[in-house]
Image 1: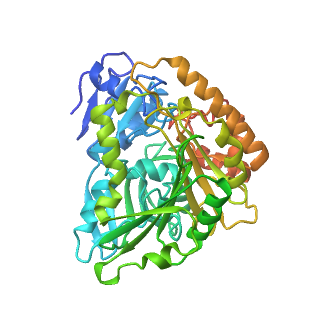
Image 2: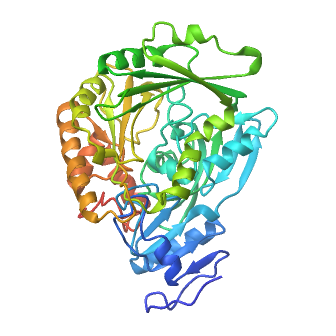
Image 3: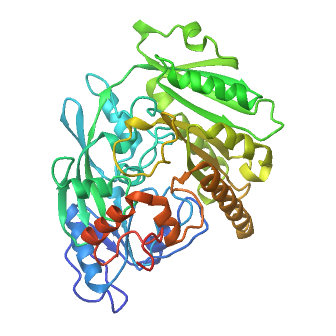
Length: 465
């Protein structure tokens, strides 16, 4: 159904929809900011679609009138990337899950990964997505548009989430509904996965699933030495039998400044041998054992607690997120770690490191650093979070300046590239440099699938093009 338009632009020609087109203040205000809570851009209207046809009809309407369009999952970006002053499409209403084969599932783009993980685990045999982000309360469409880093499952032997997509349903910037895959419509398929929403709105995805283990055992190893930590990190990511590795880093002066977390997924009949997992690793070790789903949802539980007790959803979050080449990560962290202060993290922030084996990333996007001789690249996150909900904009501006300095150094000296969920000021020229040799193909895809440039204006990738 369609609410009554309140401006001349929207007063005629609106299509009949299965879902809801909303103009009231509460709906528009609810999608006017993202996780970062600083950039504010209130749209003229909000679409809650019930079908790909709704999305196509409204993109066609907006294209005819020069109205920009942004698809929104959970808006887990921190500098306005998911915002527009035109039409916001809230994809959460596209939430169907249909198991289509023994190891495949077709899902609406608004399905949360945590809901998919829970539903897949209930199957016989138990199944799981091969890659899961650390926080799983994110939409399938949202993370596939970014890349989808394995924060809690995957990374060592699985690639990114985009590497396990079999087929997509996409509405392009022309209003056309397309099915695409590596074999059919591959140009659109490649442009949409990791393409930051520039060439189409994902409405459905066919995903691969893999058998799931019943339990998870995590070995947490603490360090006070950067060299010792990285020596063990490189040993752990290459060790057979370890299924997932990530790391946390704390400001100087903490009892432990680095923590390595290595997880083995297993069934009770084949429990891991703790000695073989930790052999040769020097960090002080603690072990935690849990069910598979308790492990998968462990970060979600932490965020839920912060949401309930600290106003998480209203805190400013000027995050810094970059890909660092495998040979440079140790030197880069050693350089920036001494400068970290309590303000850089706040009481709720974290510095996180995620390893990714390069040869398992198959598509052109998201952009990874140029090869440097290492088999690995690493995501480094400085997830800065304000201390209180009334922290003012000046804090965010200071952190933006910090992020700009950190990234300029990382890009210039170490060949880093942005993982673009964070808060770094980027011009159109910066984006061209970011995409590098892939820029001409990306620009051609934009011209083909969104010729009027109405989709995903938030990042400013094609400003002035």
